[in-house]
Structure formats: structure tokens, C-alpha cells
Length: 134
View 1 (tube, rainbow, N blue to C red):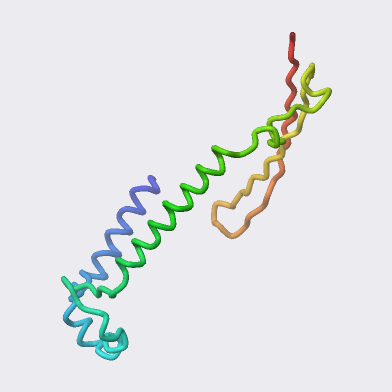
View 2 (view 1 turned 135 degrees about the horizontal axis):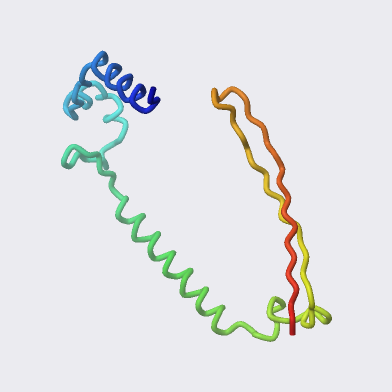
């Protein structure tokens, strides 16, 4: 017995029993929500069955201008930053002549029972080791 076939047949039976969904129309929604549309105010207009708010374009332009300004500031700071103060580029004494590295990687795997009622987490550890030959 193939479980995929059973699921497909079951899905088809459910769809047949539900029938087709009614198609929504904007006009019926608009007539049912007159009070909500009145709250939108005089700035809102309906264009192509969509509500457009005045100022949306202005906010988008302001957002783009702010983004462009922040990119320019970041480029300026990156270009003129003092390169001698970057701590990540400096080496630590004793590390530049390393012979071997060892570390542990811990992975937590979540398992779920086949019926979906129980879950448990199992920890798996891996010991990693690298020897560097000069």
C-alpha cells in the first residue's frame, strides 16, 4: 500500500466534498465595509480596486534618500578610517606559529515521533583536530 496514493485520493475526496469557493469581488467587499472606508479619510482614493493613501510615494522617496545618505556616510567612514586602530587585523603573539588545532563541535538535533506527538533533542559532539605541517 502506497501512503502517497492514499493521501492524494483523500485530498481529492476532501476537495470534491467542499465544492468550489465563491469568487470574491471588490464591489461586494466595498459595500460591506462602508464604515471602514469612511475612516480612511479624504486623502484616500480608490484606484483600480485598490486603496491608495496620499503620502505613500513621499514616504518611499524619504526612505530611499535616508538609505542613500547612510550608504554615503558608511563609505566615507570606511574610506577615511584610521587603519592602525583596527584590532581584528593585528596578530596575537604565539598564535602565528601554531602546530595543531583541536576543538569540539556540538550539534543539537530535534527528533519527532512518526505520529508527531513526541519530540526529543539529542546532543551530538564531534571532535575536530588539525595538524599543521610547516
